Each structure stands twice: as C-alpha cells, then as structure tokens.
Length: 438
Image (cartoon, rainbow, N blue to C red; front, side, top):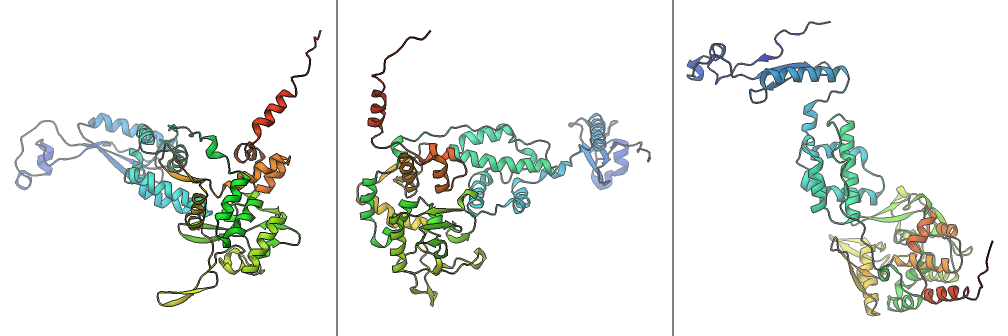
C-alpha cells in the first residue's frame, strides 16, 4: 500500500504574503514589495484520489478554517471514498438547464400528449426560474416558496412537481447531489370544486337545439359522437376499415392527436382500455352512412408508420380533396378535423346561437372556457346508460376507461327528474310500521 504524503495538506505560497517562504517563492522584484510576516497567509491544499483513482485537490483559506478545515475535509473524503459514498463536488456544479439536456433524451415519453405536457411544464414554469441554477444550490425551502407564489392551480402544481422531482431524483442517482430537494415539497393548493351546473352535461332537449345550430356538414359528426361517446381524438381519427355498418360496430384502434399544431397518427389511445369495439345505434349508423355518402373513405388498412392517410378517415371537413396553392404550388387539402378549429369555428358559435354558452373562469389560474364542451357528450352518454340500468362494467367498456369506478364519479350525473325520483323513493317507505324486536 502506498505511503501517504507527509505534506498533505500543504500550505500554498502566496504573492501577497510577506513570510520568508513566500518571499523566496515570489521575489519582491517581480511581484512587488510586501510587509514582512512571520506566519504565512497562503491557503492549505488538501489532495486526495477519487474512486476512479484521479487525483483532485481543494484549497482552504484562512477564512475557511485553514489547516484544521483541510485535515477534516481529508478525513471525511477518505472515509467517503472507502465506504463508496463519495460524490464529486464538481458534478453538482452543473446547471439545471444543462442537466435537463442530458436527462430529457432518456426520459422523453413516446405519447405525444404526455411529451407536450412535460415540455410545457419545463419551458413555462421550471426553466425560467431554475434553469440557470446549479444543482447543488437548489434548496427545498426555495422550491416550496416558489410553488406557493408562482405555480398557480392544483393540476399545474401536480404536473410541475412531478417533473421537477424526477429531474432531481435522477440527479441523486447520477451521483450529482446528495439528496433530492423536492422530496419534501408539498402542494400548496387543493382542487377547486366546480359548481354542479358546470359539471352537468346539457339535456337531450338542449343537445337537440345545439344540433340544429351546427352546420349541416358537421351534424353527422355530432350525432355519431352523441351516440358513441368517443373522445375527440377517437372520432376525428376513425377510419373506414374499422367501421362495420352492417354489424353496427366501430373499432377504436388508431387516433389522431395534435402535436402543437401538427396532426399525428397514433396507435395508442388514451389508455390500454381505449382499444375497444363500440356498438352503434341506428342513429349512429345513419350518421356514418350519411358522411360516407358525401365523402367516401378508403377501406384500406394501413399502419401508423404510413402517415396520416387522410382518405381513410370517416369524418373530415367539407373541403377534403380540394387543392389550393401553397408557395405557388398546388397542394391537396386533407381536411382532417382539428379540435381547436372545430371548437372555435363550429361548436362555440352554435352554443352561442342557442343561448347556452356560458364562460367558466378558473379562480386559481384565471383560464376561461365555454360550457357546454364537446367532450360533454361522453358525460351525457354515461348518464343515459346509467339511467337505463346498464352495469358500471359495461359502461366502462363502452367508454374505454381502465377503472369502472371512474365512470361513476366522473361521467355519470343526476337526471333532471332526480329530485322527484328520490322523493318518491323516500315516501314509498313512510307507510311501513315499526315493530318491536326482542
């Protein structure tokens, strides 16, 4: 075993010190006259080898504790190397932004919507505040205060904390910091309870009024969604090869998602339960048949990697197949339906026309959205099935939910005559007589 150096830690010579050793090392003629001293002002250098065998050093000035601090540092570092708990201090000097560039390629989600959500949490919330901070400088109390003052809304806090915590957790695993400063950070807000009127979907009479205000071309789309409860990505991505009008079924296999303005074809629905076969009512079959009469869809079965293949999609816009000039060249329009465009140009004008539109403002974030939403067709369908006595499991399979319990507390709502139904049920038991039991 190699013998330890006798001069470790050692005192470094200083150009500003006037002790004999420093004057000898840095002559006054070259480095200026200095006041003579007996004790040296130079810092003490502690030298050690990390677990890889590379020699490293750290200097301690008189203000840092000098030789005493250097000896203590050597004892602590040698013990950490021997017990394999040593962390290279320089690895924690990396900024969070630089660490993100290393971390993200290995953790980028495959699902477009999940990837966009995480990128939004990073670029909007985490990076502006913490991107230039070194990992070792991030403290739990700072993050907790930032969470309270700058991150608004319960859902936003959940997503931001989840991503930030994963970043710092993997920094610990990568031997950059000792502990995760996000481990004890708590959410500072709770979910805001929405008014029951904002959660309940429109009545069937109100939906009939909305349908009459919808442009004729899009009525088959709303009729089909009303009868099937498909999500927007599912109904806008439904393909002719997965539609069987004779059997009255529609297979949900591929969807279309919006990747910051670019439509992408995706094989995976929201959950694994999204892969399902949906039964079609007579009205749904008529809606799909009417759409296919106007704009036939190819029955070819293609793979996701083949691209959007818009000619296979059942529900498209009225300009499908037309061509227009783009940078001087004719381009054929796919007319695939985009959620924001449909909501802004078709749905919101329709609900305003019939007088149902109502702006709902989130008190935490200040965001506004119109009630009713197109997505409320799913809620209305679940409530209809519940009222008809369909089991929760069958409703779950119809809507493509992983857990049946979510169908009850998210999608089902009380009927319009629920008060009368409850009163009748309560009064039915008032005629019973109490009897004594021993």
